[in-house]
Length: 341
Figure 1 (cartoon, helix red, strand yellow):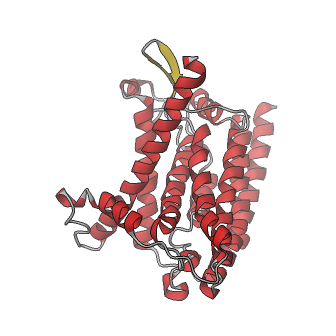
Figure 2 (figure 1 turned 60 degrees about the vertical axis):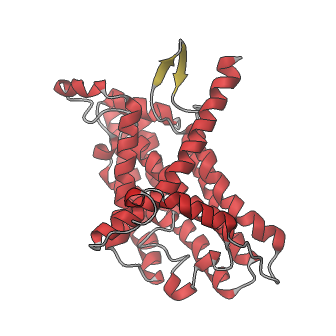
């Protein structure tokens, strides 16, 4: 009873609550890091050094008037932010945060579940989130949101191909679609796949920026061109759900990148024996540190690079990243067959 129902339920509650808290404070982290890069302070008024600012933002969004445009499709207008948010949360079901540990005499894996098609599950579920953006633009019955939703759909299609091809390269290396098995394969190989597949890692990172609509690929929002993009007509908690979905997707992408290319919960340089003292640090801490570094790079890129023009974005996706991803996949397959022979 405990192992079947109670422990999985507790893990789900912990992961969901931790994600929502992390999303709230990711907003504060981004504002602080960008302020630091621009030689200013950022939020400072609410709490010491502004640490309570996310709570103030949440209260403001909950009590703010929630407006629905007169000519909007009301049901779809309300459903769109939910469609964006839910896939970003249920993806965590197959992400391993650490190895199996013993808690009060029970062996507890630090992941909700491990299915043999975990990576396929992530790709499939994460792709559903863009439908929320498309439906938001359609249901708003407004020109700017509709244009933004069309941009988002074209952008996702363009970069999803390259990202998926890089994932196939990782699958060839690990021989499995299970997220846990991919981490264990890196432990057996005694090297992270980020070192073995640097081109795939780079393509995955760039594609992740585009798929999460982050700068310099934030074309679906592009406030200078489209006012607020697909969420122009949204306010209150429905706007907050779009906001939460974006940052939840950032954490998902960072977690997936950590698992596939940075060894998941494995310590740095698992092939170096004299660094064995690092094994004293729990695996879940290594996972969180690696994911945090990836999130920091997300923010760093936003503070550094200007937004692409849309033709540049499409050219990069179709003429650069996809050919490189295909080349990397073919090279990986050839090396894999040669190595096994």
